[in-house]
Image (cartoon, rainbow, N blue to C red):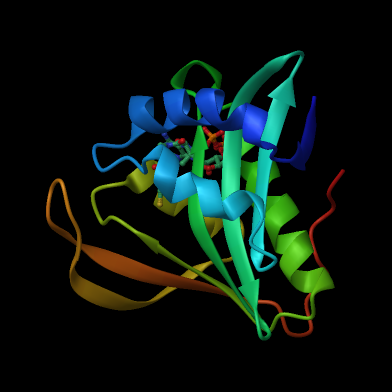
Length: 153
Ligand SMILES: CC(C)(COP(=O)(O)OP(=O)(O)OC[C@H]1O[C@@H](n2cnc3c(N)ncnc32)[C@H](O)[C@@H]1OP(=O)(O)O)[C@@H](O)C(=O)NCCC(=O)NCCS
């Protein structure tokens, strides 16, 4: 079991999870730039030979954003989402980021609980941010200044 950087060959497995968990799923074209973008931190969680989760973060100019995170429904509640998020936080911390930001649907308590368990706090709301269905976004922020990063593999 390990977190490693995503490669183009992972795309099919990533898309299968994406479409299983999101009504407004990213397309292959949405993921494609994340493989080579120097500001993207796109990693997958590998269990045996299977990809069971992934996280896409963007780390730019001292700020980090979690753009996407998901775990295959058959593998949820086993610590994988937390492991992926911790790894992204370590990457942001290593890049001297002051904070990590993300958006989450108010109707997604599982993700909100995951983020709260990692020290994220709700700091705002973006009206009508999401599509399919239209919904506001809660904006959450985890301060990295002065905090020891979480342990990661
Ligand atoms: C959110 C998601 C990534 C969590 O992944 P996961 O591997 O199941 O999460 P973990 O097992 O690491 O859980 C870590 C903590 O998050 C919280 N959590 C996760 N799922 C939860 C749920 N269904 N209900 C309540 N709390 C939950 C808990 O605090 C949990 O710690 P615990 O198991 O010790 O109680 C997963 O549910 C998922 O892929 N959801 C669909 C995609 C999605 O919503 N992505 C986020 C978009 S903003």
